[in-house]
Length: 128
Image (tube, rainbow, N blue to C red; front, side, top):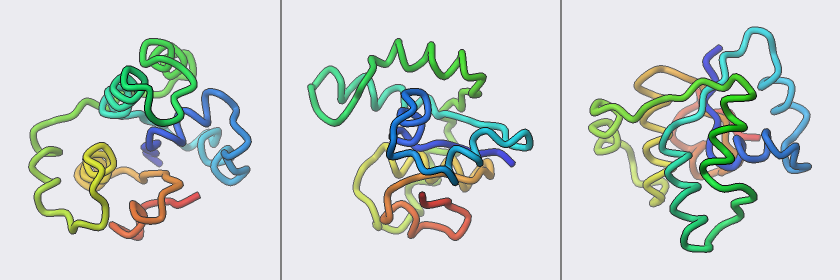
């Protein structure tokens, strides 16, 4: 299974955060899972950390090192991902969440999120 982690889930996974459920841990650690992190998540960490907003426990550079050390694969943002955002319903206003949804739907991948609004986009999204 190709599993795309949203930004918070990816950060929780690399920091062993207690908000990461056992179900999520099991899916991420499954030998059949190919775990992906979007470049958009690294961008989100960089922007929010620079602005002092959000809970960003590590810098974007540190996050990238942790993602690579965890053998997570990086998903680039492609033109078809950006185009797919236009057709998404307006369940969520956050551009980072919307691009993650579009990426998951286009590739296809199972997006893992804690956000109930993101989960509204598709029954293929895993809400933890």
